[in-house]
Image: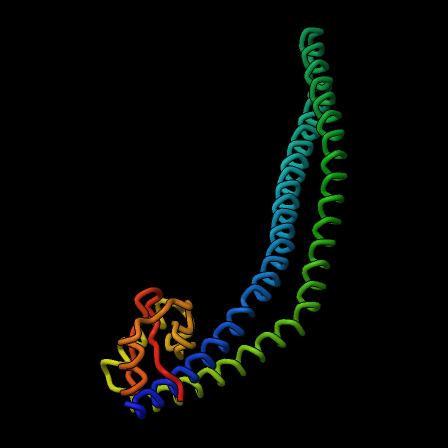
Length: 234
């Protein structure tokens, strides 16, 4: 029984080491998440700026086409003035030219506003592009450092798990199964040495008969209060 206990405690020592490595590995995730969130915020701002520039460019191109069309209409009306034969025709042609000129003036005023907005949008886009490049350059070293830590921890974990697997072969299957079930449920130490007359994990008193049995025979028992495995340490 003592050999079984020693084998189990050796496995538990490896499990505690593995648990510590897993916690260190998990602790890297918030660092990566923070880096990702910051880059994503800047990238989203850049995307919104690009959408705005594209929209303003479409408005600009469409308005320029309309201005060209209306100016061409004015030129046609001007040419038709030479062919009019009646005052009524002349009046109608002049009215059409004046309306076209009014429309062109309005559109050109609107085009000036679009050009101004487009210039501002392009400046913002350029600023966001610079911010993203600066962010990526700034994060490069941090991401490299995290990746190196991650790789080192993965290697340590692989080694520790292999050692644990070898040691687990020396623990009886029923005992190992019970231990693993408790360990996975608690996500912490599963086997505790008796402390005086109580469970080492929760300080619940152990009946004398059970204490004597563990002490005399080196047995392993389960705490009725917290469910851990208990044993007497020599």
